[in-house]
Amino acid sequence: MLRKSSKPSRTLMVNKRMLMDVRKLQMGSYKVHMNGDRLDDFYVWFDGPKESPYEGGRWKVHVQLPENYPYRSPSIGFTSRIFHPNIDEASGSVCLDVINQTWSPMYGLNNIFDIFLPQLMLYPNPADPLNGTAAALMLKDQQAYAKRVKEHMRQHGTLLLEADDDADTDDADASELSDVSSAYSSDSD
Image (cartoon, rainbow, N blue to C red; front, side):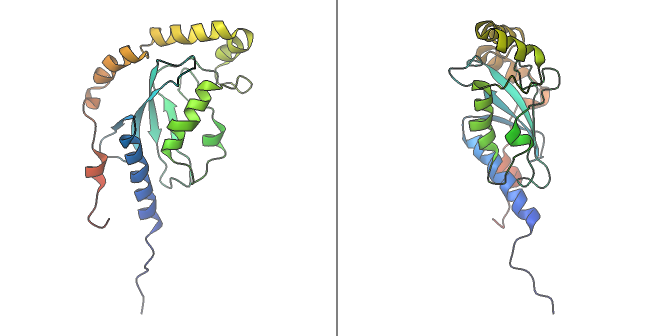
């Protein structure tokens, strides 16, 4: 006779972890836009950290969670243009070791937006660039680099004042945020 296992399936645990991590982002200071009913595909508005050249900026970051999250790292990319040595200006790809190589299931989405990305903004690594122009300028002249970052933010509408206006009209389907808790709650919780 086969007995029903008392252990929850790995898929159910992974989905609960996705839900928990997305909820934590939403309960924090982040504006999160769900891509339809999908829990694994959404956008987060990320503000530049204080005391960095990126202070006063806001960027839209696309997040895709793999099926076996948190055992595999999320894919993140800036959809708003940004001038940074470790972020490809055209594709938005991010060169961040902790996401690309040393990810651990102990990390969550809050780690990315509360720690990893702010640290990348505060301490760019020009020795491992995705944007060679930004890296070269940063190495050559820190003040010119900071000035270029601010000009780039003004040019591409990522300053907070401008971003607040643009966020409302960014995408027609982004006008209302999805409520992930109602879309993914179940009676078995």
